[in-house]
Length: 70
Image (cartoon, rainbow, N blue to C red; front, side, top):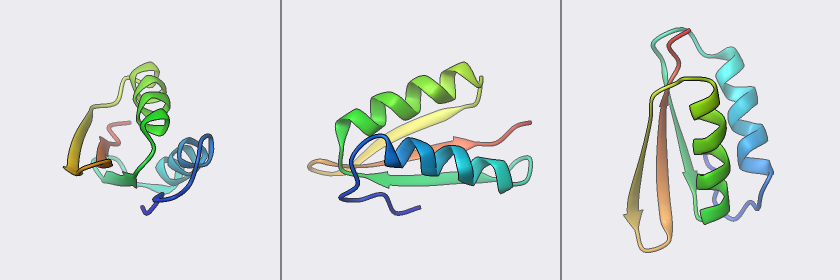
């Protein structure tokens, strides 16, 4: 999901909405260039007890991998 150039809380809200429609076992990839989005999404995903991996794909751009397990 492309969230480049979108400031908080938009990436978090889009992540929450997208995870609702995914099937169990699917992986959502969130692309962002805002460090605050990484913090907010990782914190929310942790509270949901979902696995999350954050990779910096280039200077100042990240991909957040979230697996929907339930």
